[in-house]
Image 1 (spheres, rainbow, N blue to C red):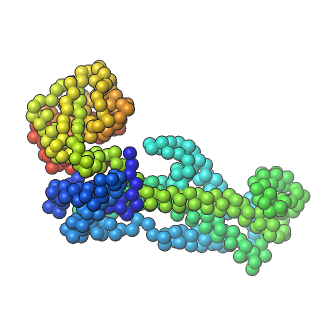
Image 2: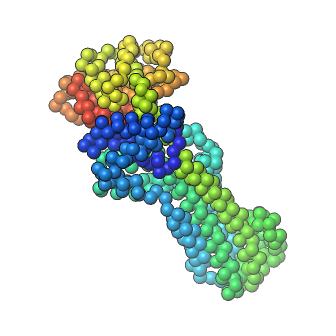
Image 3: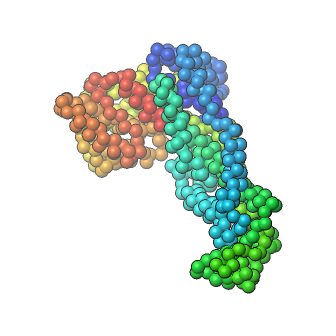
Length: 486
């Protein structure tokens, strides 16, 4: 389930979520409860989930902004500037106009003109976009939205580093967390915007190249010719007839016959081309328009449409534990958690530690249900018959001392993920026994954590390693909120 807010409101909600995940002097547990109560009152009982989240973010920022100057600075950061679009157009036009100038010649080499390099590069880009658009993403999306954004994927890491750099220097931990969360959630929007810039710049480059050809043709006597070691005039004519077929169809200008092409051949005895380049300029301009300008404008339009749609209706993952917890508190419901312990039942102290941890993250009213111990080889049967639809969270509890196995704990995780209703799933590894056994060997603890993390990554679930016998509730809660917000 996703909720839709405008981009500005969604950023505010993500920022408040980061402060909710790390309560402190600036934003206490009492502040969180106050914002939830006030939002429930101002939004009204009939308001949808998105309206409630927006109202809560608005009220929360009324207290947060005066307490942390970084909040206003974070919200004021511009994620998009129309000037960037003008810069892309201007830069593309200027580069295109200068391309032929760099060559420093008054001759168009029919086989090695810069036009062919530009067209070939763009055709490769279209091929790559087509292949990538047919491959489903992890959201299963294909089609126009994928075409709109794929052009900007290569620059995303650079954009991420640029966005995070300011918060690394001066931002508090919640602001850094908000930046990371926003980068993850806004990736489709950022990609569509970068794709828009790239498509517009490419179209402008082709237009600049066309303008350069015609402008130089007005004041210079452009000539056309060709040279090749291996090709004869008949072959060159056939090749150009095939390559320029779209332009010939649009302009009505035909490719000369083999005899005329032979006269255009450049040789040591005839190093200067004698035929005017005017018809060839028309043909090459038409090819640039058909193969670059028109497709890039269409792609730019698709990217602009996608970006505009996401700005107006930015999707938030309301099915995450964080938002479900807020919505449940608005309704006055009690969060329920079902726990599957693998191979061994948790001790009383571990059960109390898990209860305390979940209470910090989900509220003191959380209800914990421990399923019978899941024995080896019986993982699929143990998940049957559990009403998962009304659960806030599902937990698989293991002992860190156990060896992570895909055919054991992995089977249980797979069975839970395959169920029809899918509340968030969390793998919790209790470190208590392992810490007692290897108290003086921290490297063993790190090694075992990596082994369990590898299994969790393979199964696509979040992992929380914690000493349930004596949990650091503040640190564990922060880690848990971060994991469940993904």
